[in-house]
Image (cartoon, rainbow, N blue to C red; front, side, top):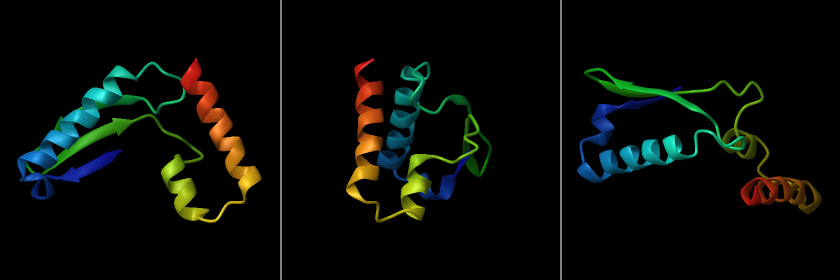
Length: 87
């Protein structure tokens, strides 16, 4: 789940970026290589984006934890991403 405090989105451009992210995620929601967005809702203080659970985590967290990968390891990621993009 992604929880966005509304205090951080008072500027129109930030809100527009969030709306754009949601539109893009909805368009690619059926692609196997993209995390599924299940629901978007908000209350007085937050905007919530509910995603499928990735038990092994996502790529952002993986690369935060493994910042210096060797070239052979990186090649594997790029091959997979390239294969998925061409499908």
